[in-house]
Length: 427
Image (tube, rainbow, N blue to C red; front, side):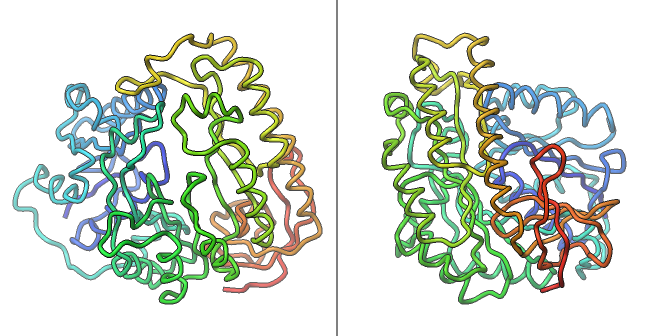
């Protein structure tokens, strides 16, 4: 039996992959290390969405090796895929696994561990699973992307689109529910394009409809979506409250000119109408988004349009990225560049406006009752509503991984978390 420590950087898809590797490792009779110092093998699922993410991947690799130089060190993920030679040359790295080979990662890491390791009993124990993972399970249903946004290196790193068959996803979700998970998050590089590569073709609404019909998991959540290829049928399915009323719709910019340079497939007006239609059709919906500041040639007028988009859509949260050029992308050749000083200033201003609207959304929730899935409990209990708003409460009579009807009574002093008073346990 060997002990393996898993670490991940970046997106939810990376988290979904790590969760799957953990389950597979346990099924093979090995165990999870709670800390890298206790591990025989350390695995880092890297990120390279920005230059800063690639730097953090290198730094995390060096830190893992420094903390346990005797452990075999395995790198995978987008940094390892884009810079395999540089990844392999980092101190302590024993194996680099390409994104296209991630399905074989467990076999390959076991092959570099001590030979002829005795096999432990094959019976799975949920105590090991729940000690190592969170109450929300991330499930990869799709990988790769057929689109080529000019700034995006992930499509280069992840390759062509590959969707998992509906029956395979259902089997995994049912297994996760049997293990005790009360929420499953569907993840993919181009989640909205799910099923286009399957024979016969399917779409995301078909997958969600099948999951709602053939599983009993209390919560089904969608991760990031591009604002195109979303069918009217998908919005109808939110009538089943098990499909969580939260959409993360990546906008990237509020300027049509910048969107064209980014090679995005929608206009600002189309995006706004999509958000409006979603709010009309989905009860209690919250919408979150991604925005990039400082894209090449972005003017003050372009940036002001992004601020207007935040005000118009009233996002519950915004992930804000300062543009950094990535080799092998079209945008890396675009001019003129925006100064680092202007990027910082625009980022700070956008964070300020986004925070104002987040507080507005949170205050609209006060006085309501909402179902909260509690994820951590220490001196306080912390969890999320089905529309993905963070809640804090006193932990009396609360338990991790339980859904509790909770009255939302106030905001914390910083104004970014709801304070709740639990009413009763639903599951």
